[in-house]
Length: 229
Image (cartoon, rainbow, N blue to C red; front, side, top):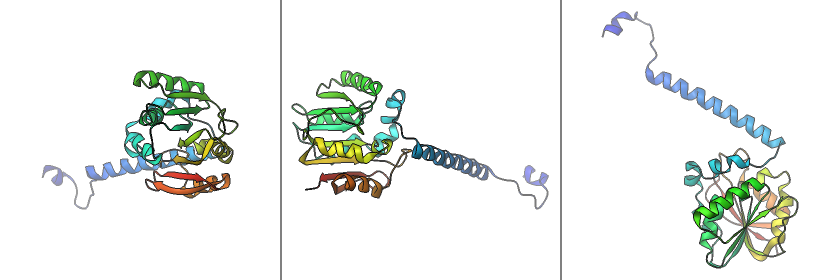
């Protein structure tokens, strides 16, 4: 009552809710501005996630909820004894889950362009007691040092958009994949390189793949492809 008596009639005093809304709006604008800047830079300059950020980004709480390893295991149609290749394994958050799912006789070839990421993967393997993973240092856009038709399945998690020429990488995927094998690619919205579903389908089609099915939704899509006959 005292405050109301001190404020002249007709004078508008902003409330706490109004101030909170303004602050949230400012943060939203800043967030969108940063997203636009980052995506603009990444559009012209493709590079992999720095190895020192591997653990923090790959296994964060948000990532674990919206794109859990179980989603990838389901999309791969896991069977014990499979031989699977991961393109851009990073620090191994998904690699470990897939390797455990195909034990005891299965094998995962974990491909990454950075030795620092493979070193983090090896640490994670020791911590988890997982031995059926073979780290492979390679540039997927160039040549993956694996035999033709070696893989029952190949998967990649938010990796294709980081590659300057995704079609070249997908041609390597096609080479190492068995005729009846599948390629699984996962993307999610908060990744700075997030591509639309139709973009990934276009890349895959140009490399000789056909979309078989989709897991998830347009904001966190997991696409399953088969090789063209």
